[in-house]
Image (tube, rainbow, N blue to C red; front, side, top):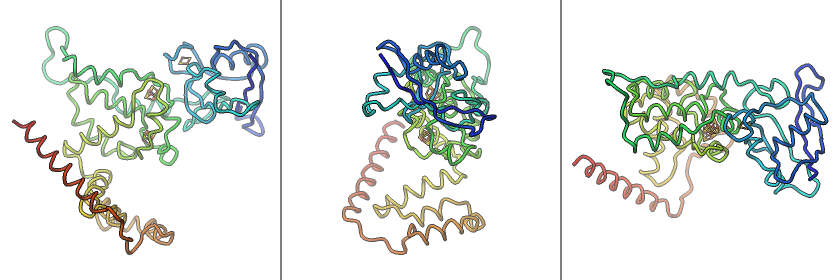
Length: 326
Ligand code: SF4
Ligand code: SF4
Ligand code: FES
């Protein structure tokens, strides 16, 4: 089968440093995008740089963007990659996003692994060591195992919108890894971990819940859900002196009180005090001038029903926690 590929090439010493190059290759029907790229490299252009090893979605090294979507080249069949393209349109291949390109499809993974290291990605048991191995209940490991499936491919990081705006954000892969160790019953440093993750610049509160990491993860790790769980646990553990948890609480309060979101009140309650509020004044003025801070809200039909839903959910939560306490 003949396939057209359009690859975003990049070489820091070339002028221009980045350009699109088209290739046509003949590969078997069942081939993957990675197979097609390897055929290009073997038969047409040995200067094309890319990373791969296992070719069976295990090693995590062939992450790239295919038609704009971050994924593994070895997990993407050519048929699937061509499914939404027009007749004759080439498959577009780019390096992974949010990481500096070294050459063509090879990106610099140093920052990615630095962030993984920053969450202390290993067990830190406390208390006396057992005489033999640590015994863990099966149910506890069933949940943790889902996050252990991560192959550190970086597809989630490549797709993350928050990272585009805030490069310090630890990102979905490192935070899913952090969750894995806070959940593991053998680890004894949950409190320290949660305190760090909730207070460090670029920690759990920088995720914008865009779902991109959940959609692209080839191993169904669902990083965003892990981050939301870390937030809940850190608030329950009392780590609430940060703008993220203040924002979250203010959001909940305004909606449960009036059935609608009051952006001005939420913004004012998200900061620590008057001096921090002052720092944000230029943003507030800009938002006001762009009509994002209305002085009066128009009535919203049905807003009171939202309030009733909140009241019912809170009552249910109280009943559940009473039952749990018995
Ligand atoms: S849900 Fe959060 S962590 Fe995941 S891609 Fe979006 S912003 Fe990034
Ligand atoms: S969470 Fe998923 S997408 Fe992110 S690095 Fe791990 S396996 Fe890859
Ligand atoms: S080559 Fe190993 S995951 Fe693709």
